[in-house]
Length: 154
Image (tube, rainbow, N blue to C red; front, side):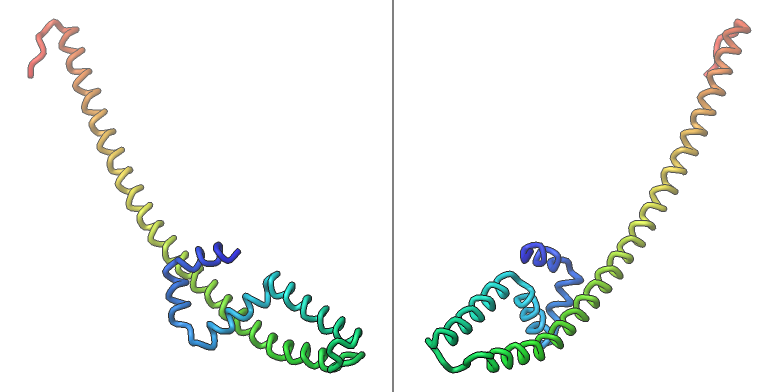
């Protein structure tokens, strides 16, 4: 997934968008990318299991049941995660819009090129048609002269 994301960012529009991003926006992108990963889920799960097991079996005994400190940690994490996710989502929407606008501009250029090619092909076909008509006319003249018994003239 990360390599696919990096490949998408190689496009000039996305590189420009990332290079010009303020530090806070780049941090938000990285944090939300990490928080949306399986690695984060595994690490958080391991920490929660260790926290609960350590406090239940009195290995730590700093947050006894009902784990109020753990609840506070989750609340704090959620309080920071939500705005970061919104910020990263807004940036993703902006990046997508810029990419679509760039793609539309490229499509317009390609359409103009296709129109030029079509015009050129149409002109070539007209000339071929004119040459074909000229060849048919010369062929008729030759056949007419052969039928009349006269030698063809140059």
